[in-house]
Image 1: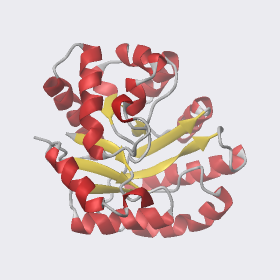
Image 2 (image 1 turned 135 degrees about the horizontal axis):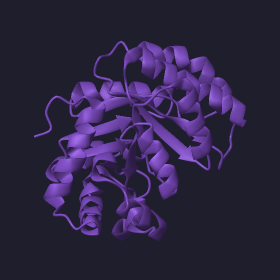
Image 3 (image 1 turned 60 degrees about the vertical axis):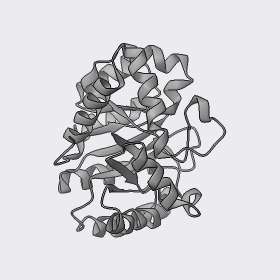
Length: 253
């Protein structure tokens, strides 16, 4: 099983990281994509990979960070890419809900990430909030076609455009408590779906109000497989293969 979006770098895991990792392993997690959301957490993702090689690092700066300062840190992010264990660029994208920085400045930061992904031949891990239309426009302008829209929250029509661009769609705990997302999920082809936790955020329905963690991926898998009328084992195999293809994982058996 692969958790394709997790933030074990977050301070919420500072007091029990080893225990959370043990629970993840007990739940059958073979790989966890451990994603930085600023310079410090991106560095932490690399450091954690040196200790736990199945925690695969992604590096980038989230659009909710102060974008003007973040642009000044992107050269430092690029230096991290000399580490060949990095499997993706992100978390990056546009956030018009919190809107901590002007859209045009967020766009500059997003384009910087896209160009890094192109230069280093890595997929993008994309965050969108009230911004899917602009993200699609920018990806089309940049002619980049590899990555995942994590924690997908858009419409089926937007999902079709995303898949036409060659991107995957990530689903996590929100699927277990959002009727709208269930309706979208049911219409999607299996070969564009990834599963994730987004831990420590957005725990699935039975754990709402608690800190999320990678071990909870099993609840998401079981719920998603029920929606699709598949066995959990069958859906796990499909989504793990999708993750293996996107992140160039050598073995997912």
